[in-house]
Image 1 (cartoon, rainbow over the protein chains, first blue to last red):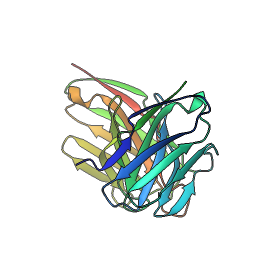
Image 2 (image 1 turned 60 degrees about the vertical axis):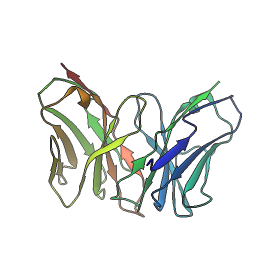
Image 3 (image 1 turned 90 degrees about the vertical axis):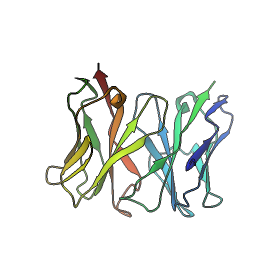
Length: 113
Length: 115
């Protein structure tokens, strides 16, 4: 009965080689978020979709892009991964923006060689 | 934007004692304050949350208090057990349209329960 699913759980890529992480949800929530969490740090919001409306955080590098083809799926694309992009990437969903519980997926741990 | 400060960064308590983690936030418009527990290598899981129209909320051994005037909120865990050992994050959320629409997290507190 997983509600927020992320694949793969572990991803290894090479420096500069594009990589895509995926997230799907069975909750039919309006909002999907992507967070980056580096070791021993707090999750940091990269961007979110409210339905089809994309909202980018001001300090999210251009190297990070996202797509949401439908309600259930959301993708994180890293165009040219650098060593500093190695992290856990967490997807989360909520029914509405703000004052709403966010449900997190298990995360994808990205390793950049 | 919102800034959330969390203290302490590490907290070690004896099993059975209480633990208190404190957070402050900067944006007076923030109105939703969840607490997440994250075990090593796992997803953050919501343990309790509070909205700005409430001063205190309790769920069994866990309670959260909110002081809007002072812009701080605290997590209280009583009768701590070994399974309470984890990293705890506080967070704040801003109303839609006024700024970042996701959660702004504190830096986390590593809670260690000593047997």
